[in-house]
Amino acid sequence: MFSENSNRRRFVKDLSKIVGTGFLLPSFSILSSNSCAFQNDRKLGFALVGLGNYSTTQLGPALKGAKNCFLSGIVTGTPSKAESWSKEYGIPEKNIYNYDNYDDIANNDDIDVIYVVLPNNMHAEYTIRALEAGKHVICEKPMALNATDAWKMIEAAKKANRKLSIGYRLHYDPYNIEAMRLGQNEILGPVNYMECALGYSFTPEPGSWKLKKNMGGGSLYNLGVYPIQGARYTKGSEPVFVTAQATVKRKDIFTEIDEIFTWQLEFADGTLCNSYSGPAAYISRLFAGCTDGYIELDPAYGYGGQAGSSTEGSMNFQHVNQQRLQIEDFAHCVMTDEESRVKGEEGWRDMLIIDAIHESIGKNGERIKIIEG
Figure 1 (tube, one colour):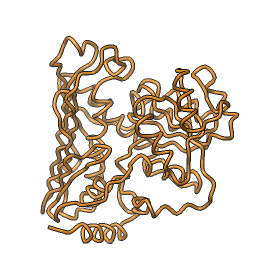
Figure 2 (figure 1 turned 180 degrees about the vertical axis):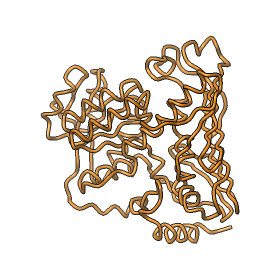
Figure 3 (figure 1 turned 120 degrees about the vertical axis):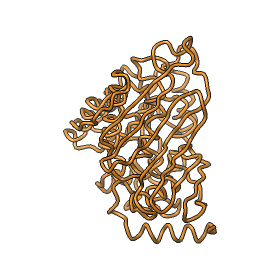
Figure 4 (figure 1 turned 135 degrees about the horizontal axis):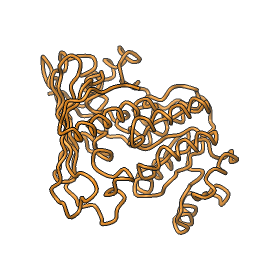
């Protein structure tokens, strides 16, 4: 069993040897709240598009505490939200937009970055329009409803010469970064088997967009991207086949979409990952069995409170504000013209897998090859 200090020293030492060489492994430099060294004093202005629960409870507060960016604008269709957010964050009226005048944001130099936090079916449209308006964009996960739309978003970013990032906050969490380090660098030998799953026991509110097929509802989009990401960034390579199943327990509630999803990812070397997403059972777990040991995070995917261990010992890292580190890092990338560790291609690769999962379910669990492009 390792102490917190020795665990952290070992973590930093090992990371320093491999920064820049991992498949998805980020640098350590922004994990510490005291380590953000930005190249100028200017703060970038962010606008949140959609003021639902995630913006209200996570992104807004994160922007309040950010070192190199701040909330300079909002886009909402609800006048009462516009008023309350304006008062709380000191947002001038000229920086408050609705969905009718959204494109006018192109003329506002107070806004450098747009963070799209809308229902899933609106991600592609509002991201592309923001890029065409000349703004850099963070799009909340899932990136889109399919890989085709995700690629259109990437192309729009290239055409506009703007940066596009996806809201994968766990790339800034030290517990998940440790799983990346151990797995990608085969510290315990090659990863040969994985289990990655995320589910909660809850009943969606009647009429919620999360129950509507055409709006991108369902746990595969809203929860499934986490275990998909977990498998990819722990193994450090891309799966090549998927086999999937879907079931509905509560047919009176889930009338348009499937309730429970299970799938198996298969990697080129034969490694398998079994996964689950759904609202019927609580699980938040990342497990990797290696030749010489194991890696486990449980819980793995929350905003905080992660816990983990491996054959090397318990993980005792400081819990961080994932959202603040994420937005600070993207602002830093914009300022220094660097690539985001979670650029658009990351979201596109997840959508390739989700497309294949849907295809497998539609073909009664047939083994489907995951095809790029």
